[in-house]
Image (tube, rainbow, N blue to C red; front, top):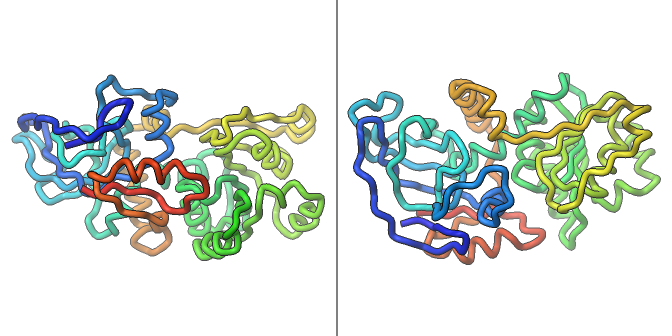
Length: 323
């Protein structure tokens, strides 16, 4: 049983026989991410052939394996090696090469949300600037899945974070929650545009790295606060507006504009390097330095409710489908 099509619906699918290199997986939990919605809408960088099962992330348990499978065994937990696997289903037969084993001693929500947002956060923090403990990172969409992972991984690496969020009725509660995750500063989109922000940021090292998931005016503000020679990495465009960089900032501050897409990173790196990244993140989870975002677990049958909730503004809880 899985969720398929451009107009998502629940459908019974025939289970393939388990071949020599195949793995029969019972899905346990799978989140709904913005990229999943983008894929259904047809405006993502990777689109499966239709009809297709939705969901790019999740965790399942191995039920049976083919005779030539060596990497996993029945009872193991597995996650997708790449996007487009179709995780919004109760069970499936996959080729061993599209799965990565994960330890079972981490919480289920952490395993289900491990392969997209935390991986994106870690790579952006490590790959673009050679940051040292005490250095500063600024980001927008700080309450997103990636944003929360950035806060925690940065804290584990000894980095300080300036976290920009949209103003909302419960801004104080959100600020406290992000600070409990390790955020050093939480400011609103409105506050960062005020003149007083210069005085506030005098006591903070100028960020050498900015992480942009919004675009438009929000990304322009991030650029204004970057240190000379700094880098802004764009990994999303929630405002559906272009990144606008002033000529002066590019010339006189020599700022760099880069993009990041985890699927491209995986194409450029070996499966073993992805497995190494997953194990690094699992170690942070075990040490209590990386927790799953706030989640609402919804039975697969109630997928419509979960999809609607995931597209509402100011939702602080990620929808996770449970099978």
